[in-house]
View 1 (cartoon, rainbow, N blue to C red):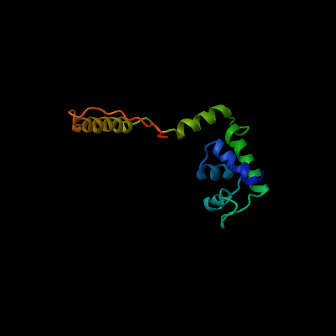
View 2: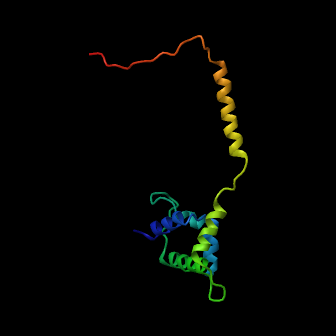
Length: 130
């Protein structure tokens, strides 16, 4: 398993975006651009693929520890940090889904009104003829 694979799996497991990873790397004074990060997450056969070195992964892991645990002066509880991230990334409840559901119901009811009730339902039997 390569450093790129480990980095990708951590990114997916922790639901990090490129901005989050850049901020975590800045906690350990390691500056990297989003385009450089994108090169790590590409497929190996892509022309812009770049191999993730040990230094990048090491700094990310050290930054992740600081991000989750905090510093000695300002300690954090990792579980609360992860829960805070989950609630921050989840979509807030809005009225849009409710309107979509009512639009679907309205459309279905309109379509049902257009159905000709004089025609009886027909059951089709799919039998193989031998």
